[in-house]
Image (cartoon, rainbow, N blue to C red):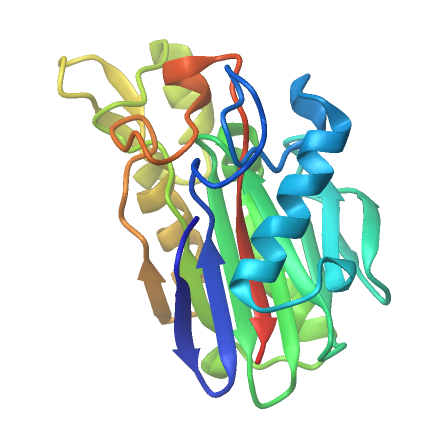
Length: 239
C-alpha cells in the first residue's frame, strides 16, 4: 500500500504501491489512474482505499489531468484541477497527488508560508522544466525557495531508461544532467539527476529522493516494464 513519510513541520508524503486494491490484471491491484483503461469503479474504489489507509479523506485530493506538459495550475478546491503537470495550493486542507508509472513525481512544500506543490516530470516535462515552473509558481503564491522542501518519488533510473540518441540529446538540451549511459552502454535519460539539477538552479537545496527505480521495483507500476499497467500516486499534505 505504501508508507507515510514524515517530512517535518507538519508535512506528510506517501507513495502508493501495487498491492491492496481491487483492479484486475494487468492493472492489479491498487491502480489509481483513471486514464489507463482500467474499470472506472475499480479505480475510484482504489483511490478511496488508498486515502483511508494513509489517513485522509479522498474528497480532499487534488488530481491533475497529466499530459506531459510544463504547465502549472493553482488549486483552490479539491477534485480535478484541470489539464496540467504541476499544481500549487495555499489551502491547508488539500492533498496534492502526482500519478506515475516511470515518470518522476515531485512533491514540494514551504511549511512556513503554507504553500504546497506537486508535479509530474516525465521525459517531456523534464525537458521543458516543469519542476522549475513549479517552484516559480510556488514563489508567486508566497513561498521562499530557501524554505522549500522537495521530495522526489520513484522513477525509472538512468541505467534503465534507454532512448534513441536524438531523444537523449533533445531532453538534455537545456539540462545536460539528463544525458546518461544505460547499463547496456546505450543512450539514456536520467530524470532524477535532471530534475535535481533544475531544482538546485531554481534555488532549492533541501531535496530528498525515494531512490527506487520503477522498472526494477516489482511493488511499483512501470509502464516500460508492463504496459498496459496501472499508476501509483505520490501524495503531499499537511497533517
